[in-house]
Length: 563
Image 1 (tube, helix red, strand yellow):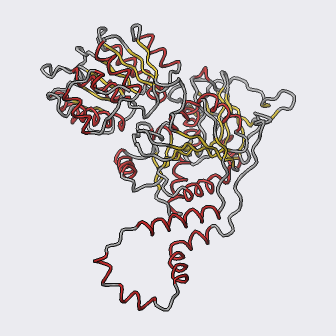
Image 2 (tube, helix red, strand yellow):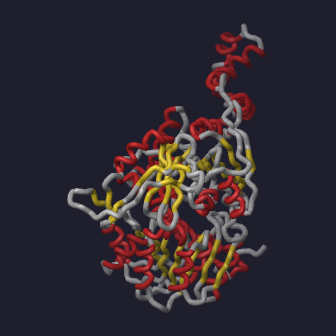
């Protein structure tokens, strides 16, 4: 294993990272650091979240800065405000002993005037989100005509968040003669297109296999009824006493609901979702980073850019439609050489989806049973005993109270004293789980028999929009929420085809969905939403006739971002 010194880093950089506890480079760092220092060719680096990508490009970039030139020499684009701030903080640490390297972060949700003032003072490195970066370029405040290096960090995430147009506009503005460094966990078609359009014969480096999970992550799944998922979640939190986790939900409504329930039930939990202001988001994230929260409940969009090394678990309360999203979720645990666990709370009919994830990641998922009340109580009891055994006693402070305590409790035997002591903290668990029933559901070995059949408690709908209309899962969820003017719908599985799509919504809202989508148009085309029923002959949905309708005066018109 090589050392950082062998990679060609300067003494001032080595001094800074040694103080931060860096010992040996990770695989991606070992590949990228000398490649950036020794070459000006473009580069694509594929590595999972938590493998040290920031140091992989940050250390050589800091070393290569010409501090006598006050122009912007490096532009780093990242998908979220949180990631921008984290990269900026890391770079400042790497450059602690470098010669006056000026680094500025630019992102939305903060005063643009403050960022403009910072740029005017001079910046060697700018770290920004695509939207704010493009805004500053258009204002001619951020001048990148002398840019030497461009870094696209988490390129796949930027595309998933809809930044393709902003990225194109920025990349077309940058000088032709520059080095472009693209870092990504996965290589979907969109990222490949960017590399072909804007990069010249890039060197491609890979840490591990493409589309594989982090080595330190164990994947587990529990099979429960949909209605029992929340009860199962609570049991998992109870049995894993030291859990520090993110719970991923499909929608913001689901995230808010789960976090609210956990809070009412006495857990240290809060939600992170798109309805929060930036100040509220920062407050939640600060509490989570300081471990005042045990559980953070989040949507995928809201969780992007979260950088926490000590997560013990990632819990998939709802599985994502895109398998690569699961890869990103699970990669948030098992970081910095620590062991992590990715948990799936699976519906009874999701065995096929789990098998597909196993094939993509190249790892077997372990089936586990939701712990019984008895197992949880036993686990909590021994944890309490461990705490008592290892507690540090302040003899000087406690000594003056002992005579009164002894006099008060002298009538009890040792056994009676232990029973009462344990019961003080333990009775609530014993009472809660006294009559707890088995939450484990039967697994389906062969997967779903009829893929057109909706999950229990959900109704399946057909919609005449598909991939050719640029429809994806996020757009469809947004369309449903906007059309129904509701944020509290429970949305199930989504299946998007080329010309049409299917989606599931809780059955009690079936009439509400049909009424909401009645007379809805998109650019002169009527949007049709109908119940989808299994067709035993065709194996597909049965739909009523779908005639094209022209937009008429007085009908609702809707347009959706991304369509």
